[in-house]
Length: 81
Image (tube, rainbow, N blue to C red; front, side, top):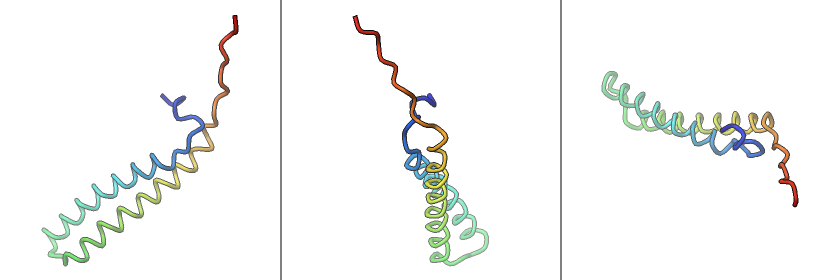
């Protein structure tokens, strides 16, 4: 499976994973803060949005850095007959 990712920029999948994680964790954290600590809705939304943007950016950077570790493989040419 890793061979399919060789030579591709992994920033987009990293950003997707980071954004998904940010949305999930931000929503859970905002719900806990709103229910348990009576935090204002605007603060909850700012935390949710901030986690989404930050984790999406971190995922983009990590994916971009990982791309250089997996250079493209040389294509094997089938023998001509």
